[in-house]
Image (tube, rainbow, N blue to C red):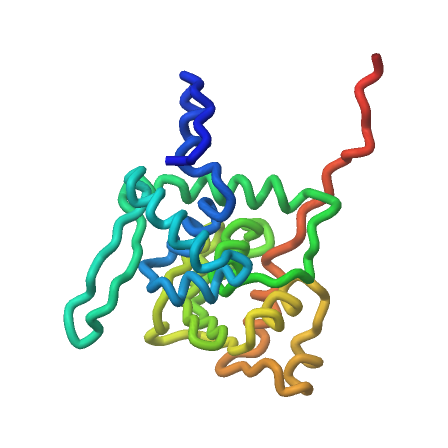
Length: 225
């Protein structure tokens, strides 16, 4: 639980007691696609110091949001995974992403982790643009590999290798971000040796256009007094 409680009977205030500390929700974000080791979490959240990250993990463990789990040999590593209750934060994080995506001050070229890119795909997916499309793609961002399934108005994303993908896109996280949201063309990225495609290139061209940025919120409007 947070070190500073609101001491408020409102359930929303209590939720913030549990997950409102800095980095807490981002830890949850990094675990939505599956368990991770401490070093994996550090890689996804480089701005969090090891001590702060360890403290957040302890607090979230004590709150019942996540749990530590020891893998069996030969891995024999300690990983962190969300509890079923912790996984119920997924729509909360997606809703926050959609709300924050409309901020005029959002830095679209700032660093993102592989999992945050994968989650942003779910957040910004346009069912209208995907109408009539049925495809399975593999996404490779360095060591992070995902299967993306699009079927009409539904998108599903999970960690792992696609068995029979229609196409596979491989690029570093920043390049993937730039191709999907920052107007870097696939052709330019491929010519620079920063992105590769296996399979149907026309499908990939359509796929990267399924995730439009939302209209910025009108924050200039003020209520007349």
